[in-house]
Image (cartoon, rainbow, N blue to C red):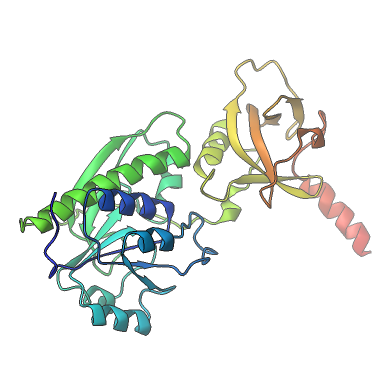
Length: 326
């Protein structure tokens, strides 16, 4: 499709699987990306879906600027030295300060996988599943200093499959991101005008941060809520978990119990099969499948005994703890 004039410097920023898919798509389409801003190799403590993009950049002659804080003085000085024009935000959670925004002679393209102004804020894909949405969008906008508040360039809408897992949703969003960035790249290449429209505050919502602890399976919750939780925090996120025999156990898939001919007490293991265990919840049963320990090692299903219970009985635990303290 030709190349962008060398005087136009397009940078990207990202450090997750979504970033990799978008960057790979752009390169495969012949887009010229000057540099990538990313996390240093091995830095993934606070990014659950971290992906090391250094090998890809090395293979495709893309310069790399490593940073753990894009707003740091060192990073800003490095950007000023390169004199970039545009920045494509492929996957980055920090808010850009004015000093960073002003490093780019044109503007920064921000993205968010919701139909803005709905769903601003953190953890958009898990929240999309937890809110049981059947459609959404990837919004492309001109970055400002707010949280997903910039002027819209366009939105790419998509349908959400029923009972989708977050990894599948991730793939859909990565595809829409890639296509959208390619459209913007072509506009820049062809010197076509990019128009903006202000976001309406009507219908605006802001979602809060989620942490690994939010993946705790609570047995007194409706099975519909637990089923969504497991799908929402499965790979590449930290997973849904509970405790059994004083060990943290994570479950990566879930199924409704279609036959519903087993009944027990809350948290009880009712049955086992080749994939997982059938558990009694407050209003029905769920199959919790493909368990692993915290280190990722698969759990041998022989560990689970039919009739025993997952989790803790809080009142009994407090009683025993008090007696031990005495």
